[in-house]
Every structure is written in C-alpha cells, then in structure tokens.
Image (cartoon, rainbow, N blue to C red; front, side):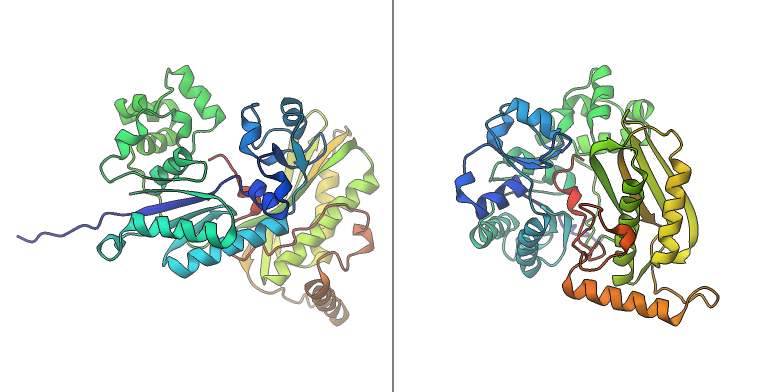
Length: 410
C-alpha cells in the first residue's frame, strides 16, 4: 500500500492599509492622525479612500463625497493622484516579486502569494512576517496580512487583523475562525446579497455553516453555493499571476448635467481617441464598442455594436459618435457618458486597401510617437480639444489590475 503525503497549502493575503491615505501622508506628514478623505472633490465625487479617523463618523469608501463631508466636516479632502499611487504600488510589487515565486496582484493595494511548501525550509508565518516588515521598512506604508490554507480565509483574516497587523489561521481551524463573524465579512456578499440573507434570518457565518448546501442554492442559485463553500472555509480559487484585460473603458461625470451637444460629442470623441491609442500602443484590436449614458434621473442606458477588428481612430470615433446619437433619444439632461471597447485580441491594425492611405498610417505612427515621448495629452484631434479629465496615463495592458479596483467590496 502506498501513502501519498499531501502538502498543506499556504496562501498569504497582503493588503496595504488605507492605501491612498497612506500615500498622501508619506507626501505630507502634516496629514498624520488627521481625518482625511481622498477622492472626487466636488459634491458628485466619490470617496476612494478614507482614514480610520473618519470611520467613527460613519464614513466609508464608495460613499458620496458630499455625504462624507457632512458626516465629518473637519476632514481634509484631497483629490488624489493616480500616478503617485501607481508608483508606490509598484515599489511594493517589486519587493514581493523578488521574494515570492508565485503571486497575484489583485488590485493596486492587494496581493496574494502562494507559500506552499516553504514550511519545510523556512516557515511560512516567519517568512510572511519578514516580508511585511520589509515592505513597511522600505516603503513607509502600513500593510496587514492574513495567512491560511486558501485565498478566501486569508482575505477575511487580513480584514480581522487590520489596521497594520497580521493573523494566521491554522489548517483545520478555518471553519471555527469564520463561524462567529458577520456574513458580510465573506467576500462576494455585497449589500443586496446581505439584505437577502438577512430576510432569511442569516446574519452570522455559523448559520450558513449549519445549513445544507441545497438550501443555499435554492435561495441564491449558483451564488449560494459559492457563499456556502466560502463560509465553510473550503472554497479554493486559484491565484491569477497575470490579469489579461478583455476590455477597456472610461467615463466622465459632468459637474453639471448637460444637453450641450458640442460638449457631449467632444467628450465622447476624446474618450474614443484615447482608448484607441491604448489599443495601438499595446498591439491590441477591438471588435465590440459601446456607449453608456446616464441621465439626470439616474436612468442608465447603453448600446453596443460588433465591428471588424480595428484600433484606428478614423473607424472607431465616427462609430462611437453614431452610437451615442442613436442612444441619446430621451433628450433629458445627461449626468454621465462612457465609452467601452471589448472583445480585445492581440494584433496590429491591418491596412484597408480601399479606405486607408499611406499618409493616414504615417499620421497614426507620428501621433503615437509624440504621445509616447511627451505624454498622452501632448497631441489630440481638434474635435477632442476642450474635453476635461480624459485619459488613463498608464498602460491598461501591463498585467496590472485597474486602479479602480482599489478598495473594492468583493
């Protein structure tokens, strides 16, 4: 009879504490221990991050900035700088990359690492502790971690360890660790799901643990199965070392609702132009484009079409404008517009023998060269001029997750 020794998995979850806030405090020490809000500074802005000092007033990320200011009027409000946050995130990424063979960057401030097998050489908890201390010492950023046999339990453990601390859940104790916690602590239980579970009398994890799987599936479908597995500490999603982008998008919320067609077309055009450039510089093509409109009454509509694979402005921009004009039927004030390219594949734009000219292709090459050298806003079409805050200023196809994933609620 043969016996196979199974390795116990060790998955580390690292999360930078109030990341945007911490970056701002590194830049300006006067902000230390003061209530701080980072995000859109207008009434329509959203809180991207908030310091712990604001949370006792009920402030949280994702809240409207207007409400956050009302709850905590003494807070300092900072618009924030995505390039600064990206730079600090990359410093942390490099430290992890040098020391860990397999890791996943789940967002700008969140990482997973597979430490399976290290116990026989070094000790996973000791290694994780030294890694965290190194990050704090070399970057000045506070960071917390959770260590367990799977991603889900490790993520929950990190949340319980915060702020700026660490926690280990030993193999076999996952269910016991999760049992007394609120069901809201389970990743993927959002506001709507929590309300549904509350209506069923489910507020704590241990209640789900005591329920048969079939009952959860009956109540919530496939999502119920996922929650049941996570509540029992047995869900084991794999690490994803590289994030392959399937779509790119951008949107703009206007300071004041508008029906100004010149402004709307200019904004839409600038968005399409910028996204097309992102495709070309990464050697990508899109075959599906979409436009999104949100009216002043918060009703949101979108329309998309399939097109032959392309990354050319002169093809994409007219189709985007046409989509917008077909979509904008209600003639109400518009609050937000957005553009999205999906069905993205790797490839270079192919010359259209009937429509393209050598001059056209040379123009694209020259414009993209100027953008790479002097910045994305250094050159643009006349029809795009006047559009404000359009642009990504980072490569969406670098394998890094989008910056908007920071502080997301899973």
